[in-house]
Length: 173
Image 1 (cartoon, helix red, strand yellow):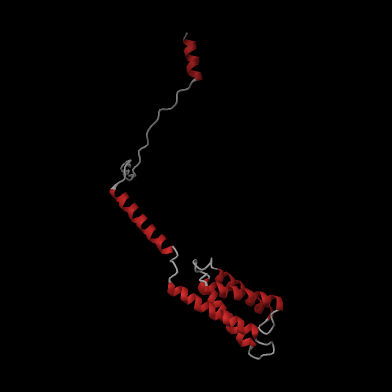
Image 2 (spheres, helix red, strand yellow):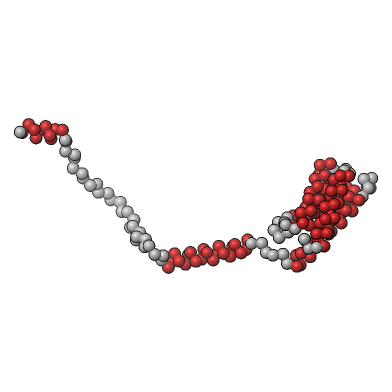
């Protein structure tokens, strides 16, 4: 019987006893446990964040176009239309063609830079037609130079877009 208990201890060795190690370092105190309800400071920070968010959204929203801005758009667009018509009607032998084209490109670039970012104008027929016509005119002069005549088909399309844009402007579109 003694041999049975001896074999049992041989098959299952006893693990060494666990000795806790003692260190000299001091750990920081643990934070208090979080409660399930909001603390006052959490509520105040949430309220401040939501207020700032609402104000920034109102700032980013496009402002409606006022009557003064609409009048300025009509005036600027009419001026660009007349410059395009004057430039296109010049004879190709006219010595002032290069200067007229330079003025037209400057006017069209400033018009596009000013009104392209206006969300309220993007849906207007007048804006779409003028933008398309200015793109065609500028593209032609960039590709072929300021003294190259515009082909008849392209010229007819540009003048037609100018006409529809003027009609749309007069109707407030």
